[in-house]
Image (tube, rainbow, N blue to C red; front, top):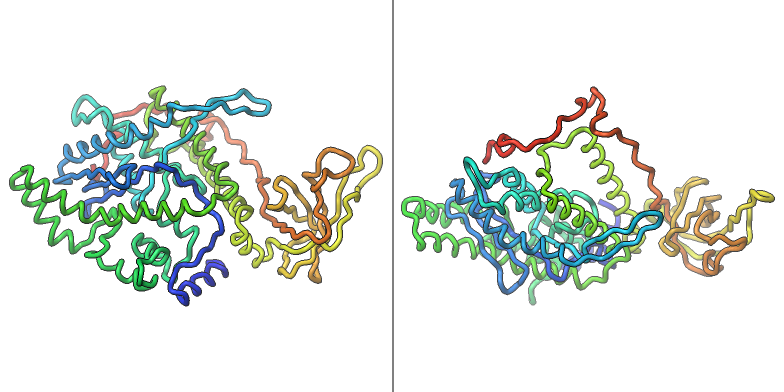
Length: 489
């Protein structure tokens, strides 16, 4: 936990309300997200019990498995979920736009992309687990399922995988998104409770954050946001209702289960839409659109693979695929850190405290300073910044600035409350700096060692050239019936 985050939590305790730790929104929030709240049977990690899903706050769809241990009922639930999710997802493929690229052919990208919102990290993990348990199923042969079920599994797997990339918003976890923008006076573990977190951020009239969070601990007022259910509810309400259905399946028995589960899901449904409102009310950071463009590109690519009827995602990546995925995730993490800091002064303040960034006023500037002679002469303006920040940057450190994105500089000297920097990139191509490229005396500026110039990923061999030390070339993937076999299926 950073110093500023700790301070914000202390202020939240003193004020009795969550404190902002961001001035802008760092995630994309769609105008029409699909809210998905799953519940599972206690003791059965992959046995869906119910879900509330939909894109209209006033018209949720409740899906229920009256006997979660019944395999056929579980996959009937998956088929119902596919009826809701697949039209929503595939509808975004109807409108596209042409994207021009420098030194490359233009390509088509979907004009928008779907967004699934889940309450917490456990619900996101269950989304991936449900995808894994359904994407290998077949529409014919033994244990045949509805043809839509394998497609549902592939999409759920895609969304769960994409959620692992920092900055992606295709699968948005409410508790994580809220925690990125507000600090509460409770522990991180308690922040995983959506009702408690929302109690601190948006307490009901007449209640303080701590009091609202305390009420959120009462499962009779605020049932768990899932996927796990409250043990008291399981023992006193759910188990008797499922037993009654098992002894004599009937519409009345099913309705009894539906009403019980509706009462468990509706409070979280309301919280999810309120959370979306709170996030949407924040102004979007400058880099949010760029990351959503990347999400739209990823979605377009996967939509194309689905149209080509390629095999489902394998259960395990090969060595090269795993290394490539890890490199992409590391790059996404580094980029997200830089973009958040450049978009948000509050985030940048954390790096100023650690000496990785500094802010101050320009005390002196030499826009015409150059290095070298003749053809090797290079324009290298010098700027001296007076700052009260603790600067821990060695000479030669490469710097970037949120004030002039794309510009680079180097530390020349630092100490005694001032830093002298040399601008090396982003001044234009003339013999003199472009207007506004060099900060003027008296201007307030901020520079940081956080830059968007990342080290290139290591060159990886083609999968068929995987060395023997990493298992050798992987066999060509061919879906088999055994892929669908799991201990919990």
